[in-house]
Each structure stands twice: as structure tokens, then as C-alpha cells.
Amino acid sequence: MSRYLKLFMCVMALLSTFLLLGLASDMMTVEAGENVVKAPLVVDLSHAIAGADIAFEYSSGLTFVEYERSEAVKSALLTPVVEKNGTTHLGFYWDSNVYEPQDSKLDMGYLVFEYNGTDAQTVTLTEIKLIEVVDKDTTNSEILAAKVIRIGRAGGGMNPVMWIVIAVVAFIVGIVGYKIKKPKSTPKPPTSEE
Image (cartoon, rainbow, N blue to C red; front, side, top):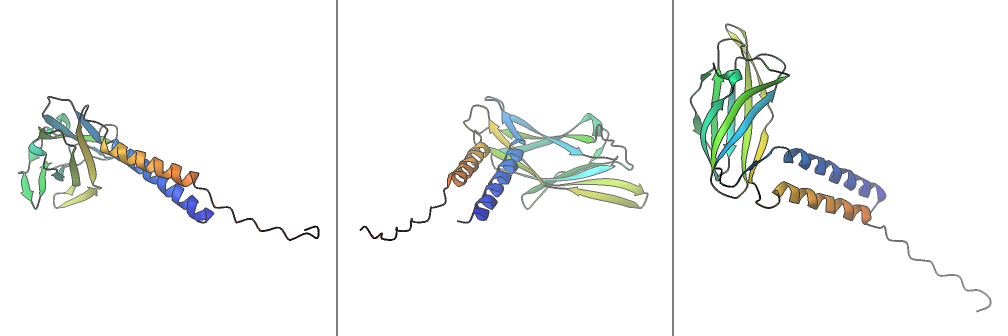
């Protein structure tokens, strides 16, 4: 294995570890005996908006209960909750850009789920479309990247993401520890004394 290939594999393994550690930050822990999970809807935002359309999917161990608005969007009108092809859609709106971010973030509230099991679950925010009114006939929209929220029980063993991180770290150690085989020693030429 060439030295450059080893270096490339090490860099890729390190990048994978940092990516996985970033995913771990979206882990929610639910205490034993609790059966309600509130997945936060907070977005980075630099300007006021008139509303948002939210699309999400969730694993079979969860039951969607409601969308709980934050104080920041409490005055908003709500769109109906619609389920289509395994994706749930909902939203809120107003006729002008009244929903202002605080410290470049807009707290839109929570998606509330019932969680009775012990297995890890996920909520995937497949799309959040932020809507801005330009004038009475025109709107702009911005679609945010998908986000995954992992949900697990407290004391339920090690987080599955941590197992992946451990595997990647072990992989890195294996690559770093790999030694390039030394070339076979060349036989000494016979000397005249032999």
C-alpha cells in the first residue's frame, strides 16, 4: 500500500469521525417512564419571514401528536397536517414578514411525539421551506437542508452513533499502525573466504 493511499485513508477516516460526531449532537435522550418527545424546530435565519412549510418523516416507534408553536410564531395561522407517501407536512403563515429571528435563530416550536418503546428512533426533517413576502403578489422561499434527530432512552446502553465513532477510530488506529512491509533483505555476495 502506498504511503499516499495510507494518508488519504487516514484523512477520510478522520473526516468521517468529525461528521459522525456532528450527527451525534442531534441526539435526544428520553428518561425512563417518560413517553413524550419534543423535537425542536429552530432554524438559522438572518431576516424576518412570513411562514414556513415543514416536511418530516419519523420511525415506526413514534406517533406524531401535534405541532406546538413557540411564542415567536404563536400568532401564526396553521396549515392542515397532511400525510403523503410517508411524509408529514404542516406549516404556519401570515400575510407579512412578522416572524423575526432572535440572535440569528428563529424558534418555531416543537414536533411532539409519543414514544413508548426502548429502541432508538429518528425524526428526519426532510424539508423546511422558509417563506418571505416581497410584495402583495410575490414571495421568495428558501429551502433548508435535511436534518436527522435521533431519539433514545436514558440508560439504554451506548448510543448507536457512538458505536460507529468507535469503529471509525479503531479503523484509523489500524491504518496508522499498519506497517509497510520491509523489502526482503538481499543476500550478501559470497566472499572469497567462503
